[in-house]
Length: 281
Length: 281
Image (cartoon, rainbow over all chains, first blue to last red; front, side, top):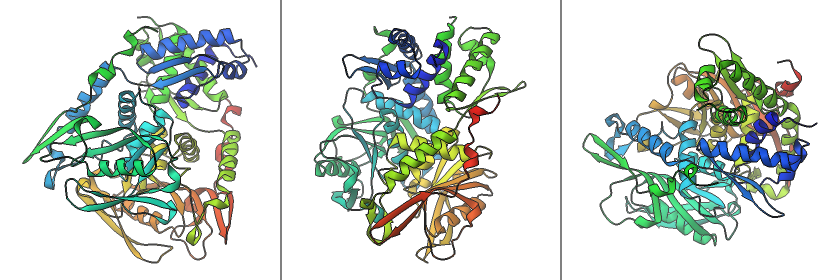
């Protein structure tokens, strides 16, 4: 049954949001709504402009026989700045101090609305990279990995410190924990990552960088490549980290001093959040 | 600046999908688009019908001063049946057999598109319950918890077998592992769940029901209530489970027999997936 423009606009918005980073052919929509391709093209122009104006993301047009429309969720500089500042003052609370200079952040990583925004930030920071999978280590990094992977529409895979029967065959690496100078082990299910994948590593907290270095070794063991490493927060750290400064991005820097927490912006490059709505079509 | 109907429809769809289970006042949209409330009402009627016809969910109208529109994501019987059957044949694969009668399911729980559908199924099964939080135990249940919590727009909280420094103060319970007859411990950060919460428990796999019983004890220790217990899969089990048949729902039943896997539908009630589009407004 032929669908009206109003119905098409609502349903196309829903469809593209539920299938991000996927090329949807014009003919798919034309058939779905029993409408002319020219009408669908006009609909897509309205969607493209509205997504751009509201800072929701880019609706790319992929030309050619295998072409179509691809929705790339992202976040603009203004909204990114506002969100980072909100989180900064949310974290900047001495009640979060835990013994040993640790910081309570669980309430940040259990709220879907916050996780969605964090996902948009990280997806935007790595928008120029080809990413086939998101990798993290259990357990605090899992919600971040899921959030980023949902927007990129790729699998997220979880390394562990102990292998479980349900992982099947695994590949393991040993690494030196940066902050505690212990030898630790990390395993990943052999079936979880195909060779030649481009992998984005995400985690909640960077201290010595041992876990991140372990995840990098795992990626090499799977004959795959590191597309990037992203943390929510990095701590001030005395000594040599296991990963280099230019290898990772962080949203926040956290310093603790007796009973005080100081939260500042992380090392990411603000330029990645250029307001895409200000650019041309 | 006054927004056209076409722009409003696209942006309202996006906004409601990003803020499910939240009452959005008519005035919010009227101000956002500099439009008359009567026009916004007409827009919402189009959205309501389109969401209903495509099986995306219900757009409820909440009357009164604190009223507005609330988008409740759900799944219809036809789509639910199709998805369950697809997953069933995906799981029904002897290559998934692991030693000890375990079944490899990681590749199900690392794909955002599958997790979203599982989330819609579980959210629909518990749509009549008031749910304030989703609870699981690390680590396999986390992606399911996040997926359900995202659609319900409530926090998801993660119990663990070992407490971490970063959890702060914790409450712990001991429980008897159903399948292994060992005493185990489970901890939850004290700050993570306010008293008097209604909590939905989710997990990947039901064997003896020990973990689920442990999660139930934890909920009682937090002076909260159990809104339901939902598993992706339950195994055939000889002996008395730690939870009763009428306390939980499962999407699949899995039986293994030497080198063979048999997957059948779980114990959930198909009636919860009644086609809501067939009902009146």
